[in-house]
Figure 1 (cartoon, helix red, strand yellow):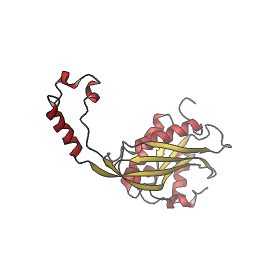
Figure 2 (tube, one colour; figure 1 turned 135 degrees about the vertical axis):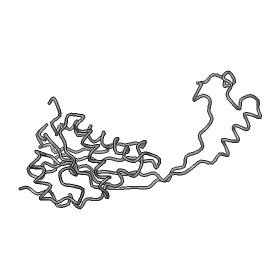
Figure 3 (cartoon, rainbow, N blue to C red; figure 1 turned 45 degrees about the vertical axis):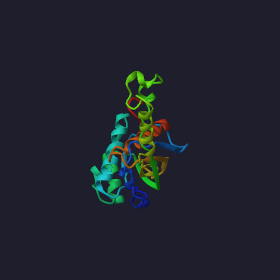
Length: 225
């Protein structure tokens, strides 16, 4: 029986996937496909999220599998087949064969930077609400006279802003063929995560981009193909 490459169980944790940030910008910077791989040759994938806690791993794998299935790609989260612990190569390979998975996805963090960002106070700018028409037509507070306008401007100029420690995280995602352990597809992604975002939701932009890049590469069989 073909065993998984040994480093799969030793790859860097993907805990930063769930630190914070559904509102950040995500981009996939590089995608590589083995030119020798037959198009649409992989029919079912196992998804492995490398995390420091079972919760992190489960959320990532579930959302990745859901996104694949929504596009007609058959997939299984690894934790449902082999549990939450560190993966054993022989057992995981056996489960791949038993469930008919002919491809295995693995994602890991390759770089993580903390960026401190300053956010100024929100400006009171009537054009954002009323276009360019004069604000006095709408009874905008603070525009009754020059002193009211001055007080409005002074309040904004002296209002304190705030800082947040955001993260820029780089990911590498690889797809291996189960039959011979060959690497057939990989992608590098980068995501800006804001501290104020909800836990769990921040993986969705990354997952959507990876699934889209995978489908564009024509490596896996999707519904209707």
